[in-house]
Each structure stands twice: as C-alpha cells, then as structure tokens.
Amino acid sequence: MTIAERWSAVQARVAAACERAGRPVSDVAIIAVSKTHPADAIRAAFTAGATDFGENYAQELATKLAAFAAEPLSQPGSPHPLRWHYIGRLQRNKAKLVAGKVALIHAVDSVELAEEIGKRAGAAPQPILLAVNLGGELTKGGITAEAAPAIARSLAAAPGCSLDGLMTLPPPSEDAAASRPYFLHLRALRDQLQDALGRALPVLSMGMSHDFEVAVACGATHLRVGTAIFGSRA
Image 1 (cartoon, rainbow, N blue to C red):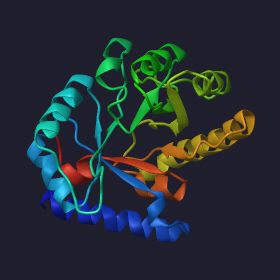
Image 2 (tube, rainbow, N blue to C red; image 1 turned 120 degrees about the vertical axis):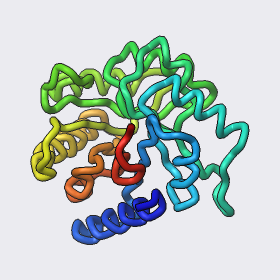
Image 3 (cartoon, rainbow, N blue to C red; image 1 turned 30 degrees about the vertical axis):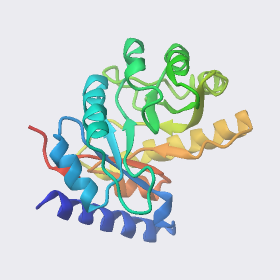
Image 4 (tube, helix red, strand yellow; image 1 turned 90 degrees about the vertical axis):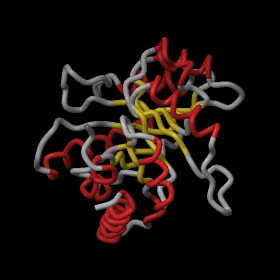
C-alpha cells in the first residue's frame, strides 16, 4: 500500500471508531508519527490529507523544520496546514530546539522541564501535556498517577506554558484490548485533575497504530499513528 492508501485506511478506521463511540470525528486528531521517515514521506502524507506530524528526536525535528521552512507545504484555505508535535522524551538542554516551534509537546514529566520550555517558548505560551506512566515501567518516562495532582498544579502555573491535558503510553501488548484499562485510567485522572485545578484539560493523547480504535472508544483526542501510515521503519 502507498502512504496515501494507508492514510485513507486509518482515516476510515478512526471515523468508524468515532461512530461506534458516538463521537464526532472532528474530536479526534490523527498525528502522523514521522520520526526517522524522510521529507518525501511527509510530503506524501500531507498531500493525502495529513496535517499533524509527530517527531521523537529534537535534532531530527530541527532538521525537518528547516527543510520545510525552505520549501513550505500549504493547502488552499488553511493558513497553517502543517502542525508539528513533539511526542518523545525531551531533555532540558534540547528544549530550545522544540519550544515555540511545535503545536504541542506531549511528554512533559517534570516542573524543571516545563520551566525550561517556558523560558524558550517566545511570545505565546507553549501548549504541553503531562506524561503519566500508568504501567510503572522503568524504561519509560512519565510520572505516577499518585504524583500527578501536585505536578499538574505546578505545570498549570509554569510561566510560558499552557497545560492542555495528559498523555500516556501503555505497556506493549499484541492485544489492543490490553490498553483499555490504561486509557480509561488516564481519562479518569484527567477528570479528577480538571476538578482539582478548576480548569479544562481537553487533550488526551493516547493510542498508537495497534490500539487507536480502543483509544477512541476511551475518549482519546490525539492519536499517535506511525506504522499504520508510513509502514515499518528501517
């Protein structure tokens, strides 16, 4: 299958999942995870209709930002058609490569990182998400659910940042249904934090190529889909 065909297939699956969940498809953003994929693949996905792209590595993002600034993509009627997301773990010393340059940073897990992002954000606050490690995996970043209320309160007050919601990455499993408890936990935690903070946290970033339909059923607003769109990485 071509990238355009894969993109259309993912769109159709997301639309069907939204219909089953009684949700409008406009509630769910598909982020095409383009890490390690070349500019030509991004252009092909964009031509097919993708507008949101996710990168995991700060230096790779910086390289792609420069490439597309030199040769921008655009679509009629959309003033900012290509939106970048930073979805990987971000080191504080790399914050300058990301802050103020992406629509959303998905994996902020410390007050110190948020403060560094805020310093580098520029005139407008940088939207961020609190990364929550619900599986307790030592190999992944993210905070525990128990630590979330205190850290969320600090992130909500961090200058130069806008806390927009939560993200999670469940433990790996070939069974998509195995992700459901983690997605439901994140949604419940988001609702709890909204009440505690007295503010909306509209974004739930959860769901990847193998389990995004389950994520839609559990309330995901942002899906991080790579392999199902671009194919396997080399």
